[in-house]
Length: 371
Image (tube, rainbow, N blue to C red; front, side, top):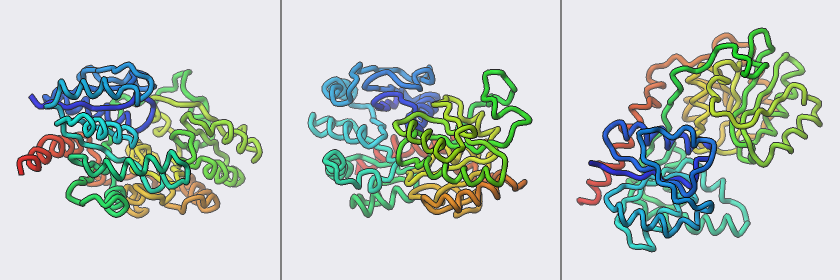
């Protein structure tokens, strides 16, 4: 039986963690033995763990403290291929293999713009960048979630094209997205309410929700509407203060993290991605799959690729809140909104993406090792 281990530090509520759970479930259903190895079994997605995978909890709250326990696990399971994601997790797995002379094949998934994330002068950023430059080339295979990420890995880290395969994230929506008017649902999304502009993501600098709030403050002067931003993060108080200073606090809500953003996407009139950079924004394709029209910054990387240069949604320059406001207004007033393209949807089809992962993890690596 083919065996693999998916490694994550925790099951915190990020897009990468959700993608890995979906991949583990799908590959397990194809007859592969899948261990979900976590440094600490905590986070918003613990309740989402599929019954098809075997959970290995190293029970260490800090990733660095699980170093020896993970090495012991790998030594006992040297026939397992390791799939990991997130830069610090990728570094961790590659370092464990190198320092303990392990034979496990390591496949890392890169989903973010490294040159943007680690471009500061802080010692921490410099250390991470040094470790990435040193360790990433030692991966057996790298899966980049977009063409832009692949080119960055090649040019910025000098990694051969042959080692990098582009596989986008799959669209996997719940089969029963809630559209009922249950009392527990957000009151602003019930029938008869003004249209809602939606943002989804961690409240951090990268997502640049301040530009969305500034744009929205212009939109409400022309169109009656409201803004909901789903997510948690360190910029919550700063963003609330900005909304207050702009005099729109009554029309902006921060409900926090929600396991079901899809119901919001189904009901919202426009989804806005305001990020400074991305790798492959899951929420963007999820919104399109839910039939919600989108406005997105043309940030590196992913949005232009997903939206076919603007064919399937509006693209605006990063931090341009005036243009963002204009495109939001135009989208709110437009009747032609949803993507209706079978080829586009198939590109992100769940089973199609699973097959690509299976090919890379179990076939391509075996061929490379044999050669």
